Image (cartoon, rainbow, N blue to C red; front, side, top):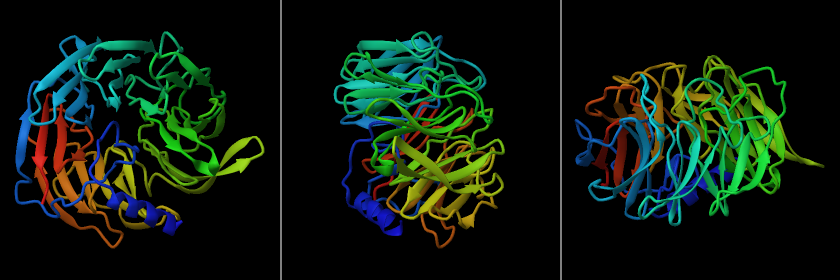
Length: 419
């Protein structure tokens, strides 16, 4: 396993700067291929290049393709997909996709996915839309509730970032007959609907707050998702549900996007659930998932903010409502360091990104931390506080073009982090 992971991170390091077309980047790993970035931050943090105010409310992260930034926001009583200029953040267009969701946790959580001249997004009410990337014009729309009987596992509405894979767009209505759906990306017409069985003991029925990732485990292209009842794998060719794993499901909110590597899948949820590594292997009629190890909630549970595989090690924030930094050996589940301390000034869960040997931890109170991605021990390289934090500071950081982008509700901040 170690040589496989070492090779994958070598290829990542060798890559050149690229677009960031959706949730957690091109491969949904949370790893940016950027290099020549600051290894330490000056006091007060890196220099602010620009900021965009009056963006609208929401926790959505951003996508970057070409000279455009895409995100989602609530403005008044409506929810929008918004396009900005990459240089300076000037608004290019904003397209209404449904009603806003105004409560104590304001706004959308999904991130638009950009493919060619199209932008795909999911509203908090479950509208799946395809928009023209040049001007925001609507091309097609589906409804996860009306078209597929979709439902969420709990009260916080749809939060998924749609996946584009080849000729299709995938999303998770969460009903038994249409747990995951694949539609033609040009027309929105169904390709297949993947159902799941009833009767699993843990968790709750419905979609969770995660997003789909692609796996080639056991030599079969498949879509891996965390649902209200735990992890599932669905065959890409025909939508057959290949396997499921219930043990890490909780009945409140399953959130973190799974990590896939080779034949392995790692997932984690909080609310006292825990984490697991699964190994996928071929069977006469498909694929099975066997538990390699299980980590109880005291060892590792990720509330939200996610975790990232770098080489042979997973990094993320541990604890329900916490982001205690932790390094875990992927193959064995052994904790190399952390999980038992809070970083200075950082409170709440931590949204994590990676670039050029460093981890970017964004804490719920708006504290940013730069931390070495090394199994040898915890080493902080800098910190600063995001300005004007009013609600929980949850949007995931994005590193692109020598810049660090931080969405803070109504404002998008862009910092220079190139050496």
